[in-house]
Image (cartoon, rainbow, N blue to C red; front, side, top):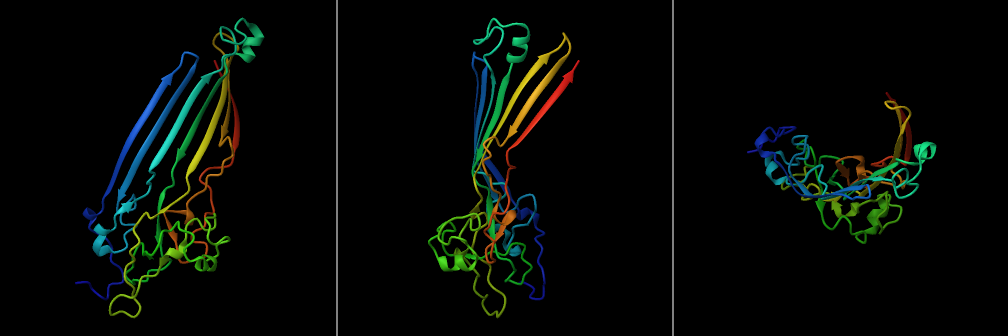
Length: 280
């Protein structure tokens, strides 16, 4: 039986907490005779359980941790990366300026172009209420879910009341539809304590991410054992905005204005860096 005077129930039975990561991985590495190397990798994965690195951090009902099962952070279903290195065909012995020597070859030959392209689907996160209506000291009190959180045609009036700038449409200030989450009813025989919500963990998804990084580099040989390495790096080359998670973390409050808003970015704006390295 449960003790009615307990203010908080801590999940001490660590044997109930589980996390399983399973993935399909594939990669392709190809070297071409023209000085072009490419490595492509794809991962389809699921990270399921009732605990991430913070044991019990998502548990709503400490008496039934086995019911708290779903995607846990970081659950990224699809991830693709492409890295490449291209030795530009310019300079002595190459397709262009193949007979060049001296200063021309020193400045125009031997350049390398490299880069990484990364793309992944959105990360899973939880829908929670801003307060513990169960009065049990729940770590992650969740609402009842009555519709698809990405069905923005549902209850546009509540969307507007919660501050959505364009009710009925997905926007950065309303990444998901908060109106589909409602407070659970009162528990049987209670006047203040509510039942636990039926929304599962990991029902929400953050934005997808696509990023392009580029490097242009060359070694300038000064003497037999002396050289200068020039390297220019372009991070987020296309200046593509990659947004963070709504709520700013692994959970988003669904019952407060701005609870579904995205206010940060996952990657910085385009950055350009230059570096010179002298070795001897």
